[in-house]
Amino acid sequence: MQDFIYSSPASRVIFGAGSLRHVIREIDLLGAGRAIVLSTPEQRADADHVAAMIGERCAGIFDRAVMHVPIETARQARELARQVNADCAIAIGGGSTTGLGKAIALESPLPILAIPTTYAGSEMTPIYGITEAGLKKTGRDMRVLPKTVIYDPELTVGLPTSLSATSGINAIAHAAEGLYAQDANPIISLFAEEGIRALAQGLPAVLANPSDMEARSQCLYGAWLCGTVLGSVGMALHHKLCHTLGGTYNLPHAETHTVVLPHALAYNAAAAPDAMKRIAKALGGANASQAVYDLAKALNAPLSLKEIGMPEGEIDRCVEIAMQNAYANPRPLEKAALRRLLDDAFHGRRPAASEAP
Ligand SMILES: NC(=O)C1=CN([C@@H]2O[C@H](COP(=O)(O)OP(=O)(O)OC[C@H]3O[C@@H](n4cnc5c(N)ncnc54)[C@H](OP(=O)(O)O)[C@@H]3O)[C@@H](O)[C@H]2O)C=CC1
Ligand SMILES: O=C(O)/C=C\C(=O)CC(=O)O
Image (cartoon, protein in one colour):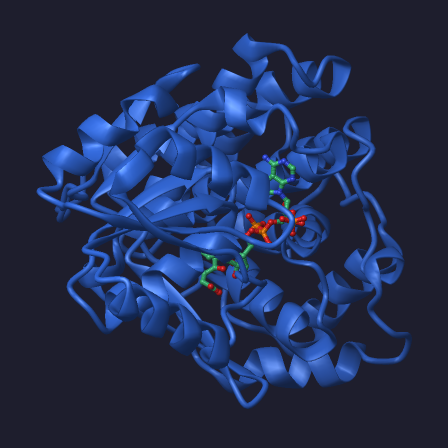
């Protein structure tokens, strides 16, 4: 066994159907008085529900969270939190709403109580992202890690099956790259394997019956574990490519992860054989990249970059951008192979069984 460093994230997690009922107790345990509740405009009803549950402990609602946290939105939310004297922020929603909470925590001492309703996993990471003048900057800061997370699968029943599928594969991507991370460690690898297994089991059952609480619980449990992996070890080629594609062509976040993952795994397969074995085993398949592709297909998820909005003729430009910044990856970045990867992802081809470079 190799030497390793393991740091335990400091979040308190409350998990279970109906666990939202503990929200006042959790505000108390944070030592907070009054909370500002954050949501997207479309999830305003969820924010209203939380506000009604906490009554006079609600200092106000900010319902303007949007994807990628524009700096203007972050400033408005920070200002409202200040005006209403909130000493805690409750973020109910997906990664966009959690991201807004993080932007507040970055510049104030407000602890975040996150109530995730997708599988993106942001609630378990100290990673923040803020978009200014069209450019998204990400960073790591322990101040933004939510202090408490309430995982209530009942709140995910309304997540459409299409988004459940892609958000679930977004979570699997965190775990898959965690298994071959440069700073991987055996504990986080256990989280990764178990997270993939739970999602691979839960997602088809959610597709069959979106109200199946056992399946919803499996998925949210898997999302928690995969989010912990994202927050604990470094990501590699797959996440960098998705960041480039999402930022350059404004592609939808979870869908981009879903399309790219099989191809990023095929690219890295020969350089990370142990990780591939563990990913394949957790997915119940023989080959990691094909098993991810087949799962996405079975879930009726998008399989090509073309169908999610990437324009034709952009692959070379994308390869250039991907080659610009050096980062850790099991296999070195090779222009021709990256081009093949992106071409396969653009057309949605199933990765070949032989994954050797
Ligand atoms: N910092 C980090 O560690 C991480 C950050 N992220 C960031 O988070 C963002 C993506 O997060 P993601 O969760 O995928 O997307 P969003 O938070 O944008 O949510 C995606 C969609 O899900 C809808 N939605 C969420 N929950 C429900 C629900 N329970 N029922 C019905 N609809 C629901 C939202 O609807 P509506 O808009 O209609 O409310 C929205 O359309 C990106 O900006 C990404 O970069 C992602 C992972 C980790
Ligand atoms: O871009 C961010 O906000 C930070 C990290 C992620 O989105 C992780 C991911 O690509 O899923």
